[in-house]
Image 1: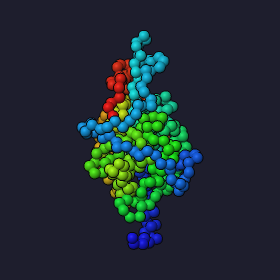
Image 2: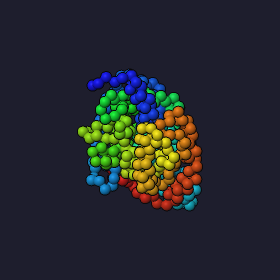
Image 3: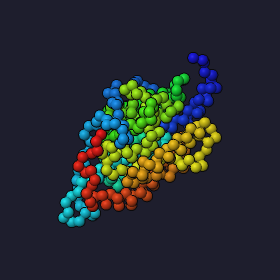
Image 4: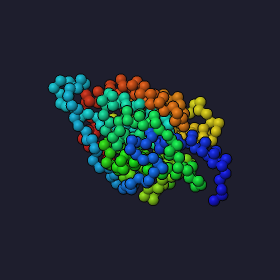
Length: 358
């Protein structure tokens, strides 16, 4: 391998600080008591199992999920939307679909904080790229305020594990190890809430859903932005960023068993975005692709929350503003959310008996 000059390394380091924009880098510094990324390797875990294909038209897949940690229950107490004396109706199983968007993913924390403050219980969590990072930590047991505290102290440079040569700038192993340590080396099926992580099969472009196994490996796959992070090999198959096929995983949440889906779209608007540098051009390419795909999948959500984030996908300095944007957007969506949930409770809940096949 040819020696790399100091100037070239400096250039790559500067570019890398902006390109560390996948979900892996989107959120949160090390959890209290967790070793830094430069420490010893994480305790080995069970490998991620072969995931189910997300598209309904795909061939039937082997079930990949254990019984939900939070089975649906009848609504407790009085319900103003139900006439007095009426038989209790099972509340909707709520799914939270967290989309990709790099540093804009801090807005997910603000949305989660508002839902918790309003007593809206999430039964299923599906995440893509940045959403897979937030989703994995949320599903493991952290609440919105815990996520915010960690986010504000984040040092994204911790995740820059350089790959000198090959098909990427970074290996992505650092984020996988950090996620595993952050969740106490538990597998996905051991989390407090059911979690689905979306990635894309590199060989044929199929969207896949990881619902069990090694959480760090699944998040790494979902966050493997081509050219930035190396593709992730799981079970002999290479996977890349889930945002290529499902930027906001509404269908994944429904596949897991949700019959009411709250989608959080943190994507950028392509209009007016800078395209002067290589980094800008790469970001704009993903923005355009994501917007086209989102038109179809977001239409299947019951409520879509769109935080008005003014910072770019690589702007980690604006994390506090992104959290606030998530809070404001979720608060603005509360009237619609309450009305639709009340309407669902007032009548029979579709598919209220058994979750969709996995």
